[in-house]
Length: 236
Image 1: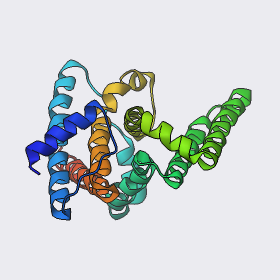
Image 2: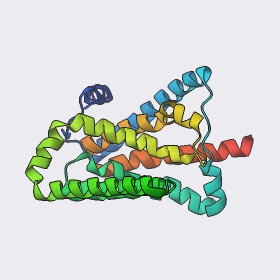
Image 3: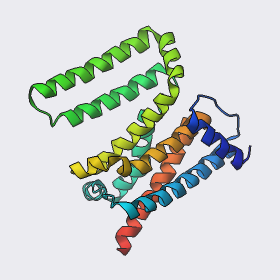
Image 4: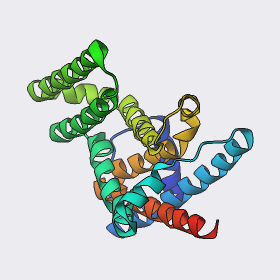
């Protein structure tokens, strides 16, 4: 399989995501994973530069805050290893139908939503909390009691599941801002665009090559990003 064939398959996959796997050696899988990461990076940088010419995109500030709290070694370990592994479990493990993966992923998302709802007090907060909890338990019941029907629905609506998860992965990174202002919310499609594109690339690699190759994609990306973060901080 050539890089051109991989790129063609990636474009075809994005048009209609599917669950097909490919039979390749680990060397080829690693090579194509890194190649797709490189292509994704170039695309993100070029389109991001074009967007910056049109509108100023806010810079996230939580990196500096986290660095100050954790210190350099723990900060690097979290951004390069712990964070990517956690995000892959939450956002990429459910890209193949497995009841345990879907439940674990949903549980983490529910806990995250509950954390966001913590700022909403009064009756509305309790109502929203109840709705989120009810949806979670209904979903768990359906997955465990009607596994065959669940898998059929999963396969039928897989393209929507894939893009929905990629979009969620993008929007989870809006928490990189300490203060999520109205301007950030209005510009959020542009703010989370790099993570959305990254999610598409990692998602494809995870489905075609396997979970750990998606982790490799993510780790390499964050390692380069954190290197640039420290270089900018040093030279600015």
